[in-house]
Image 1: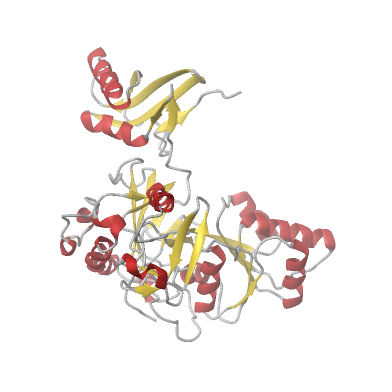
Image 2: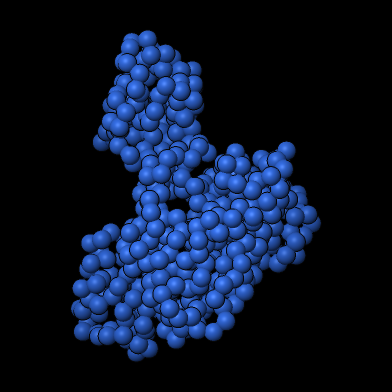
Length: 450
């Protein structure tokens, strides 16, 4: 089954999937030639940029950009990154000012409902609206598998005719609806378990003979432990797609010992599914409806393959046109292709948070400021700012890689730049290339708080 990439938010699935899906892959998009995929993604970019320019929140950031010229990764990389904090700030500012025209999405969405129509950007109706912590409000548009989770579910072994016990929350946040829509798109039946009520959920799983589980890995463990404790058998439960939490190999093996093969999906409430695990267990394969970049934290600069940085996502969605959206999560690109035959880019999975802002002597220090220091000294490589000591007695050391011969002059010059950029004094330690860990950490807060 082959559908075009681009257009609707759902990317590969702009309409209902027709009939049961069989085989090792959801459709031919997963195994197409990488050059063909890249051409399709880049061909869809100009319309995506134009849609972003049409919403107030991004119009200013993308002013002067010729949308039709953004048809390559190099052109995309010249656009600014929009981070999650900006969504929250704009929504909060609008609420505080009781802004007119009224827009609960802070000017980022092209969909909404009648009361928003006077904002001038809402062209289509939203099907649902969600609230995530902050609060941040997110819209959902129309379309089968809008959040693109069907691909992740299919890779985890979910098939038409399965009964899926969905234990993500159906309350306020979109997690449960993401899985619900994707499961139905591939022909599954869904039990809306939600969170809590462990005994009742376990009873339903046993009596309805659920084939598969969707939810957090920790709650699945709770359910299986309760099943053992109470003597409830779950012989039909064989597979799971988990998300929302870390899924360490130890827990994966624990589930396998109890007859459940668990796979993970990497998704956010803003952009939906980003990448998913396969039977190869070698990183996560990027979804067909997104463009993923890994950038140096605090910047929009793409790092080399294998280097850890922030995950930046462009989703092919005209409804909620986030271009170069910084997730705040760390990961890295894996070399090579997935042994399952899927040919898309792979990432290592979630490796921590990129937002490493620290408050030092009453001043905030941001990763973007360290990036500015490096820009002023092109002879420098990877850097890490270490904040040590006790509160009110902080000291900063910038450890920075350089191939240049160590000299007091270079160290002093870098220290001066740090002072200019951050307004704080800092020691500088010059180290050899490759000395610093490849973990994406730019600021390490090693202070004692006890």
